[in-house]
Image (tube, rainbow, N blue to C red; front, side, top):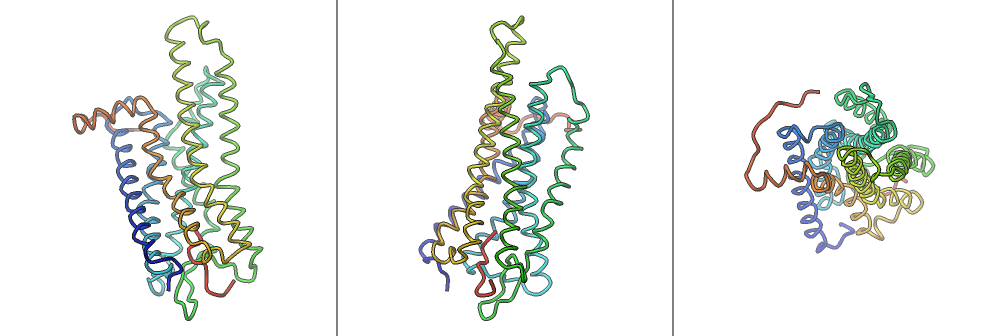
Length: 323
């Protein structure tokens, strides 16, 4: 019997369905515009396409699992080896996508720092988008190895099979280490580095005497850099805000494992907010970035743009919904 009130489930399903629709539309549009409009192609734009791919992974894999868990009370319905493989790969992919998103934001902040603080240095090696993409996904997979180690489809008789992290004899300590690891590597440390870099960028930009710049072109360039930094700070802040409830819930669960049954709605909202970031990201970038905003407006008014050159470059009943 589900610990949630039956009346809540249809509303939660509708909320997830809307989130999936918004995420699919936004991320596919972002990729489409980047492919068709050469003026939108930059390292920052390329990395946001990278984030769009990660967001689509969350949309196609994680959100349907979350909807299904509403109706199965979190039970994992696939049997045997297939159940084990889908359990591990599903949550491994979830955390790989999350890591890829935060690492993309981190690389973007490094790029902005280099562009503003060292404007006369090209750093061509750093700005190889394809190389950066491979590095981001490789690091994301390495960071997510502990997820593949601890997640298992386990039969908890008489309740059924659940896809859940298993810590064997480590118990609460192992759980604390696991969630602390995820919190530090996939949330706190990257956000601290990003915040520090943008603080340095902001200081460098606002210390410059823009009216005294010798040419109008240079002055416009300075103002453009400021707008870009504002946009990226907003997107990073929204990422941090969306994922904070999930991170907090993990640590509450470590010390109060009954939180799921006592406060089911808080669990639902905590995990939904993190996944909803996949729907917010592309729309934020497309509406806050001038070139993407113009391309999106043209697309909505006139339909698809003309093709252009392709882009080169504890062992009781488990709290199974802990993610």
